[in-house]
Image 1 (cartoon, rainbow, N blue to C red):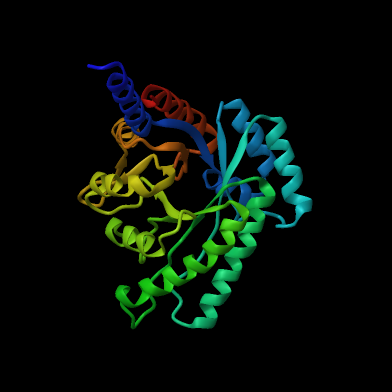
Image 2 (spheres, rainbow, N blue to C red; image 1 turned 135 degrees about the vertical axis):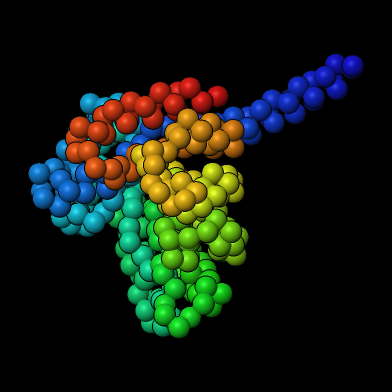
Length: 283
């Protein structure tokens, strides 16, 4: 083989490897402490400090219990995370993009604009959003263009703030992987991708996870997930993380803890397991 041909083939092989290699990081979703946040026995500052104790790389902050969306709350929290060496990389919000009325959809989009600003204030580059439930009397086929419209409008603003919108498989119109992928393909924006929840699919769980991975920019990991009969069972994390790594995914795997054991007891143990798996399969 000539030297130039060898050099070019080596570069091509290196590029192919780079495209396939994964880079996995540990994350923790604030929803794991929903009971504590609601009861005000924990604060978001506390979650940042716990993340340090548990060697968590980044936080996905569910916003439901924010005391305020103003800079008086977000900027000190951003500073605390920075000096503690923890990244606030995502926030998780509620949205219902399947509203039949144009005015209702306009309000949903404007709500997303506000959350994009909050994410930007916190230094987060991702927002988990919901598609919503199909209104009574309408079909999914009718509702898909509404969701696409909302995401297109919101993505234009998100692009000006460097924030990606991650559409989650959260039931309703996003119950099945095929439909989520259809919506993301129709939006056709680098600022709208998939927030993959490993515990939300019903049936063909691993097949649907695999389908979504090429579109995925954030992953939320559940301790339990439905089996093929619909019964919630411990999820095979080794299988999940191996599949994620083989897809070439680069990003966070955030624990969203919802099981029965108290979170302050269970989360450290589960985070240690996620850390072990991300280190094993990052390559």
